[in-house]
Length: 347
Image (cartoon, rainbow, N blue to C red; front, side, top):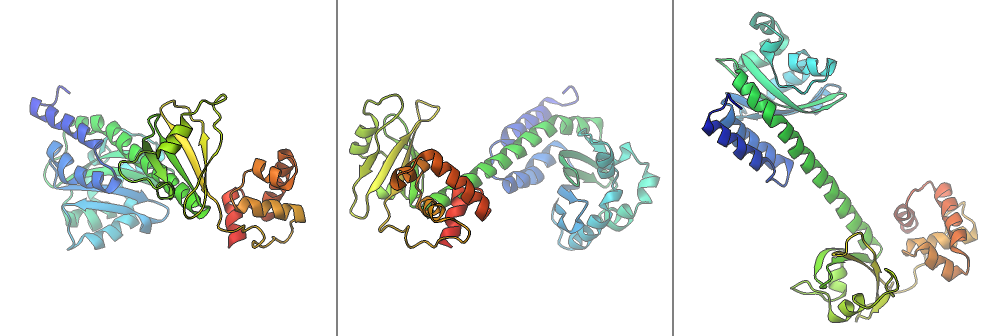
């Protein structure tokens, strides 16, 4: 920190704050290459690289400033000789997340003998480079690289990247986790829609905090998103333990069955809504080859979204017997989830 002036220190803090204000990776990446890094460490070229050493054609490289004149040709060659890069080869031989310069490992003379220099960096004018690795996998390296024509990077430049690198890792990991969670939520919503189900998360005052599927439409909610009084009153009824009696919400289309599911937070309540089928679809679903008659009945009820307890009540058998049937069905049909089974039967 002692290497930074007051103005540089303020720019560094501004960069740290900005790192966590983006909603997706492309926007964060562009801001770093276009604005944040050039302010902190002036360079002639800045790039974001995901180097795939097993399948070079899959390498991703984003260069700023952009150059359509020669970059596509040079990028193709870079993917072929990336293994010569001293920073890349160093990381693969001995994983090390410290910030390094090319000049840490090679003299200018040795650097100039590389095909990497002759075919890629010399046409660009890259004589000096410093890089910060933010992710390292067995055959893939993700890093930011800064390049110059005239003067090598200083220890002040290295210090800035060393301090910045952990924050880069956190920011990119957070966005990756957020994207993964959103994908799971989207997939869950699609699955719920497939089986005429939906969920609502509400607070104790009956305000809807989150929803999936067609739940809002089914119960006729408009702005503001507050539960209808009848459902809110039902949710606030005294309960035995954490268990609410099920509620059937009658609509002009089809009845909606609502269950309250306990959560770990007193400020959040989960409602599961299931729309009653227009007609019983069980008989229409084909039996799968290899299943016994009883297993076929259980499988078809699973396809309608029934739980093991509900299937047991319908068929007049114990939930434990239903559970055993489900295990046999999964094994015989080679499926792992109830959703996959239902899709198989409905296909």
